[in-house]
Amino acid sequence: MLSVIVPCFNEEEAIPLFFVEMEKTKTNIAHEFEYIFINDGSSDHTLEVLRNLARKHKFVRYLSFSRNFGKEAALYAGLQAASGELVTVMDVDLQDPPELLPRMVEMIETTDIDCVGTRRTDRKGEPLIRSFFAKKFYQLINKISDTEMVDGARDYRLMTRQMVDAILELTEHNRFSKGLFSWVGFKTEYLTFENHERTVGETSWSFWKLFNYSIDGIINFSDAPLNIASFVGAFSCVASAIAMVFIIVRALLFGDPTSGWPSLVTIILFIGGVQLLCIGIIGKYIGKIFMETKKRPVYIVKETEKS
Image (cartoon, rainbow, N blue to C red; front, top):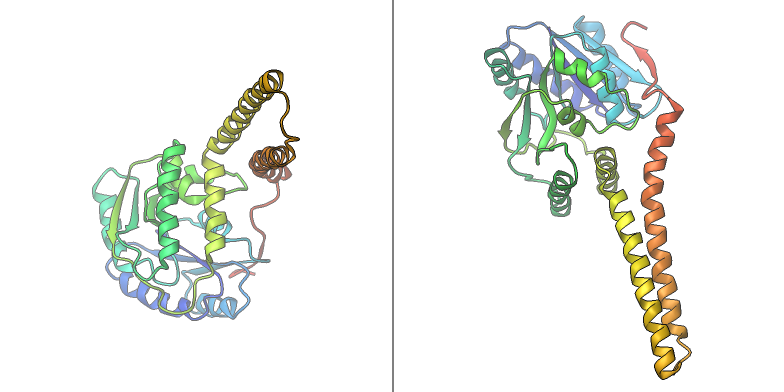
């Protein structure tokens, strides 16, 4: 059995196209298939499309969330629901080429690897500013984290049951799948492909959503921001002490030529800004801890193909 996990958010137009392409690809793979579509609180007719598919095909399953919980929750739900010995994660917009899947299956079955990932060789069609910050994110995260993340890597990958079970043992609420896939280890090889643009519709990932997502990735897999906050605090203390000694010596030798009000205000504002920055960094980590301690479910399912 090969389980295909497909998160969907307002993808009523893309689902039929994806299903047709996957059915063509399936003929080249000697495995039974099960599709697991996750409706992540869509506001269009995505759920109706999934209901119709499930009625027509017994190998099509779906989970419909009670609201939008995000792609990470959808991936986690799909992995929990998958029953296949091989599991793949794909985007429904066909940016993840289905034609790579037979090769991925062959690689896993003929070698000793546990996962075949995919990565883009270019970012054609993507806004330049997004591409720039994406590259900088991977450069940064690989310098400050012990978990290596491959630039251009997609969530699209084929995994063995053993690897999937290992990922499911990570029950944290704040999830960053690219990091989790790398953190669990297991032998992984990557297939490269040229970037594919969406077939229909528009992406729901804005620049600021991606920016916040990258911040989550840094916080989840590195304590470097906390170390930076500590360094900045220590540096400010040392600089303040040196400045204090300088002011005292100058006053003793030359008196106090000026009232120093402008410089005093500037120093106070600078130190205040540094303190707020450090508190903000610490607050992000405390916020993540707070969410973990609540033990809220990662997602809530409202409907499946059986209900």
